[in-house]
Amino acid sequence: MNRDKLKDVKRIVVKVGSSTITYPNGKINYEKIEKLARVMTDLQNQGKEMILVSSGAGAAGVGRLGLKEKPSDLPGKQACAAVGQGILMNIYERLFAEYSQVVAQVLLTRIDTIDRHRYSNSRNTFQELIKWGVDFDKNEKGEFDLHREGGHSEFRILHHKDNTGAEIQDSLIKAVQRHPNIEVIENQFAVEILTQHHLGVTVTRQTPDIKCYGAYILDPKTGKVDTYLAKVTLMATGGVGAVYKTTTNPLVATGDGIAMVYRAKGTVKDMEFVQFHPTALYHPGDRPSFLITEAMRGYGGVLRTMDGKEFMQKYDPRLSLAPRDIVARAIDNEMKIGVMTMFISTSPTKTRKRQRSTSPIFTRNASAWASTSPKITFR
Image 1 (tube, rainbow, N blue to C red):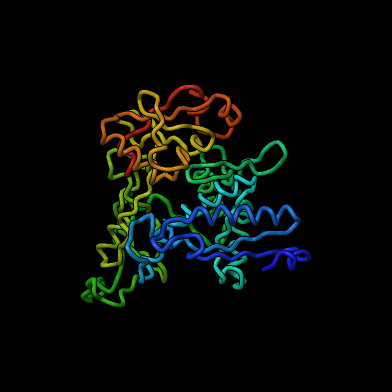
Image 2: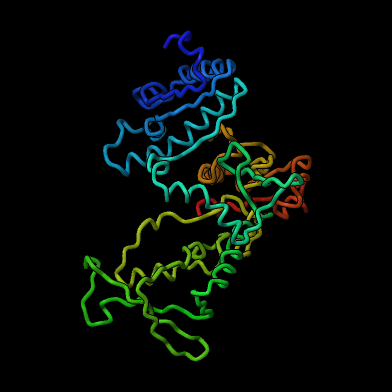
C-alpha cells in the first residue's frame, strides 16, 4: 500500500505469515523481521496505532527441530508451534527492542473472543482468585508487584512473597470450607475406584464404556473401609515426583491416584511429563530439596560453573533467563562434560530491593553463591 494512503489512518493491522518471516527450511528470515520492525516503528512514530498479527510459529518449530517438512498431523503441528512460539517471540522482542519498542504477546483463539463464557473466564480468573482471598503482593503504590522468571522477558507474574502456590492453595481450601454445599472429610485414604468390575462385570483396557461409581475409602482410626458412591469422581492426587531420590516435589506425590486409575483399567497418559524445578539448594539427604525460586534468575541471578564462568550463552540467547527445560538440559550437559557443581551468583544491588518478597536465599546469602542440585535437572 502507498504510504500516502495511510496519512489519515489511525490504526494499522499488519498480518505476516510463515513464508514472510521464515525460509522454506523453517529457518528465521532475520532481514525481513528487522525491516518489519523498522517500518512499523516508523509508522508508530507518525502517531499510528500498530498491531502485528503474526503466524510462523509452526514453521520456526520445524526449523528448530530439524524436520524435513512440516508435520501433517495435528499433534505434530502443535508440537512445532509450541517450540516455535518462544523462538519467534524472543526474536521479535530483540529486533523490535533495537527501535525502543516493547513487544507484548496475546495468545487468543477466535473462539476466546466470540464465545461469551470463554472470554469471561479469561478475563476474570485472577479477579476470582483475589475475591477468594488470594493475597497477591503489591508495591508501595498499591499496584501488583510483578515478578519475572525463567522464560519471561517482562515482569508479569503475580506472586505472594515466595510461596504463591501455598497462598493460592490455602485460600481455595478456605473457600471450599466456607461453601455450604461442600462437606470436607479429612484423614481418610482412598483404596480403590469402583467400576462395573465390582458388580461382577469383566472390565479390560479395551472396554469402551467403563463407568466409575465412587471409591472404597479407608478410615485409618477404625480400620474400616467405607463405600462412597458418587455420580462424578475426580482424581486430584498429584503426580509422581517423590519417586525420585532428589526432588523439590512434596513427598506425598507418589502417584497413588494414578495407580488406582490404572488398576481400574482407566486411561493413563502423558506420564513422561513430570513437574520439576531446575534449581535447588545442594544439600545431600534433604527430601524434598530446598527449592531455589526461578525469580532468582528473573532478578539477575546468573548460572555459573564452579570456577565462576557463565555457560548458558552456549545454549540459548536468553542466557540464565531461558525456560526451565533449556536450563535443565544445559546443566545436565555441563555435568556430562565434567562440570559437577553449578552455582547461581546473585547481585546484592538487585536482590536487596526484593528481600520482602523473594526466597530466603536472597536475604541470607544475597552476595553468595547458592549451589544447585545437579540431580534435579530432569526430575
